[in-house]
Image (cartoon, rainbow, N blue to C red; front, top):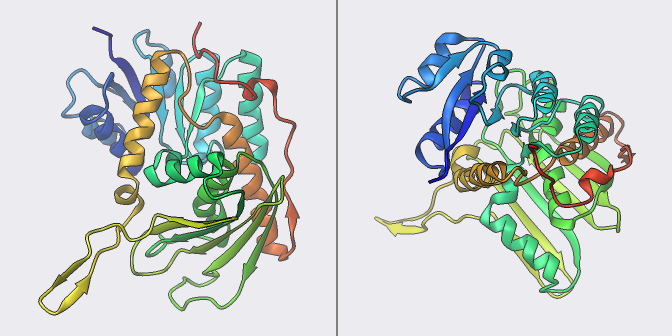
Length: 345
């Protein structure tokens, strides 16, 4: 019988706690060995029901142990870089929730560290790539089921935003997923971004412009647009429509049961991203665990994290200017042009 992958989760907040429960209850071949959080009480509470798991307040304490096989980072993005660089230095396979880091410059430093190490260790948490609808649409595009893909139309709607959610965060925290989705569907880099801002909802907090339309173009000229509407009130909805030469395909529509009863009709909308993408998260973590056991990564790479960071920077510049802004990127290293290589010697 294979020994379970012993995972240290860094961050015991909303996403960290969710992943702790996921690994403990639903993922095969892995177990929670440690949790790191600056708030020791929160770390201890997150693993109180998991025998043998240990709480730490410093990631270095995890690196000093000889019984940790992999790490999962679920802290705020501004804390990612140093943890990632330390993980690479110690040859520790790591799944990092998006963003890889908050900006392209620091993301590039992570890429350079992996290139220097000569192996891919970092998988980035773009969970939508594991959603059944996303996977089905990707296959249709690759197989040209309905001819060439021509355009992509995305909707990203949240019920509300938390206090302090800025215009820039609409790009960096919401549209970042669509930047990765466009790259995932097309297999191409995004070359330019434009943001159009029109009439704003009265439900947007002061200073925030909502909704926003984000327009982008890929290397071969495929056009994609995103309606980012983050105070839509009715629930959480993420959907995509792809236009092909001989057909149109939509994913992410209303898939809940449609009920007619007592003189009423309709269904329900998921309240948040955890419910909408719960199966995608499960597939993502299982793929990561399975790959880490083989010394590989099982999903988006550090390069994907860097590329989306570059797109976000272009998007924020486009917000401010209203112009079409080119996406500036470093040349892609050879390490990311082939299949993921062994993560550990």
